[in-house]
Length: 149
Picture 1 (cartoon, rainbow, N blue to C red):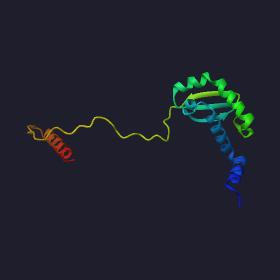
Picture 2 (picture 1 turned 135 degrees about the horizontal axis):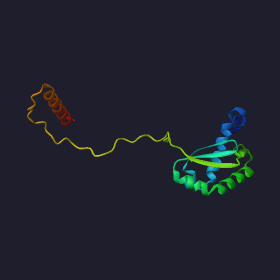
Picture 3 (picture 1 turned 90 degrees about the vertical axis):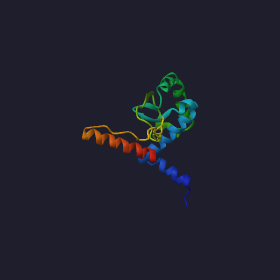
Picture 4 (picture 1 turned 60 degrees about the vertical axis):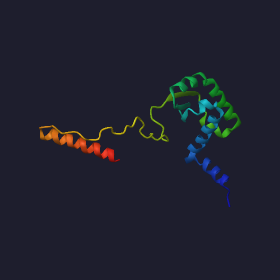
């Protein structure tokens, strides 16, 4: 019986599943970056000898810009120590900030000042028009329903 480790190794070496090897290599590179930089990276990808970092915040873009030489050095060291990471070898490094919200963040419940109804709906309806009279009565029922809840 094969071990899970050998099955995963065969899957990673399958040419149709090269994105698994790249994903593992990206995670290794992220683990080498300083923590504040690594936490701001949403995802990474390579295209035409360029490694792209998609970031969460515009402030991180400047930090990545200033530390490009550090990232290139870490990438070269990673490839030297782990030849399986050769798939993410890149000449250039570019960063950009995405404008899409993260998928894992759920919108929070509506917050704000919630007030209890102060009115008791005990007003006299002096409207002479049928439409206005009906409108005031619907306001009265709305107030009474909100008081009941």
